View 1: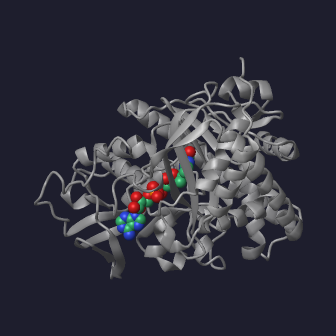
View 2: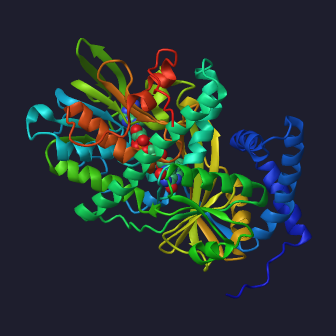
Length: 517
Ligand SMILES: Cc1cc2nc3c(=O)[nH]c(=O)nc-3n(C[C@H](O)[C@H](O)[C@H](O)COP(=O)(O)OP(=O)(O)OC[C@H]3O[C@@H](n4cnc5c(N)ncnc54)[C@H](O)[C@@H]3O)c2cc1C
């Protein structure tokens, strides 16, 4: 493989780019900077982190970004439409666009709020498992369009969830706050149990997605070629430990690959071993959601209403009244598939489900060496090739609840990502045409919630920590089975691990028994 001589910006260009970056800083750039300062230098004092970060940012602004901008350009009117939604939406304005007389039903068995991965999964499983009986209808209500939330704005990877060691670490960090009664070794044991429960469910999730795409012949550009995650020199010990945990627990999707294998799989040049999720896949995320919903609607057991915002859910005796911008629906069950938007509808989740902004950009050109259909993450950003488009993305910064779903990408971050892409792939001509952001949600222990949230019949699936494909489909299956009282399939989301009481009322949450092995 040959590489052209790297481009280097002139002094004048450096000064122009530097000033442009400095004076172009916006509110979100400062918020994102705070996130990066807190996460980039583990174990360093706050002042030390600040100093290191400032030095690093000046280096980026003076060297890396100006050099990258020698070969990268932005369209004069960069679109804010995510690339996945750029060619239109087959369920746009459904059903109102095709049936001017359509009305919301007065009564259904289940109302699902939100039509992304999670709402689509619930609809699909309901259509397969519920009886063909008008009394058993599910209504899916979406305030925007199907897949207009994060599900239509992401990187397009079907992940095998977060790897075991990562889940163990995030849960362990949080446990002293909610289980002060446990000794340190017991907390470690509990964190390990949480991680194993999460990964087992996630592995089944990945396999179910593949089975479903094949069985139903969904056309959503699915390919299963894994996900490579670069690691720097100072992250090698942690990588080795994470692979050891995978071997110990038998959750061996997570492994490591050497730089030659990284180059072969992805086209990315690294100097150190990278993490590798073997069974991760890539797909067109919005086509996946639309395919699930279309199949569900065809069954007649599911009705889908876009452009219908839920304003309030009110419990009345054994039922619920769901108040929407188009009227009220009476229902026996409610499922919130609202991810980062949840605290707006249910304020009790404020500070428990944390809207967190991530962004991406896409354009023409990019590195010829970059391989398609494989997940590619650098240490601070992700890259992907989809057809003739190359995508770059990054960020995980908490935003206020009311900013959930806003499209407000940082141009600074996009330019930084151009430098990162150059670092891994070398120079390439790249013309950015689309740039957008979305909000995912994190819980304080970065562990999802799947289950009943009010002690009655209102459920939630949320807090998927940016790994929605690793949770939503299997969790949707399990919730549908619970609502229907079906016990013929395994339930991978036991309440002791996943019930929302873990966040809402940890003292009275029924925590899992500690296993002695
Ligand atoms: C840039 C980026 C890259 C990512 N990359 C990946 C990846 O590669 N793989 C992966 O697995 N995950 C990825 N994620 C995360 C993934 O997209 C999410 O985890 C997933 O989309 C969550 O699905 P969801 O259906 O639960 O939520 P959403 O897709 O956010 O859907 C929630 C829906 O609820 C609707 N809604 C909210 N409130 C109301 C209301 N009151 N009334 C009616 N409707 C309402 C919203 O309009 C929205 O459509 C990424 C996210 C981003 C932003």
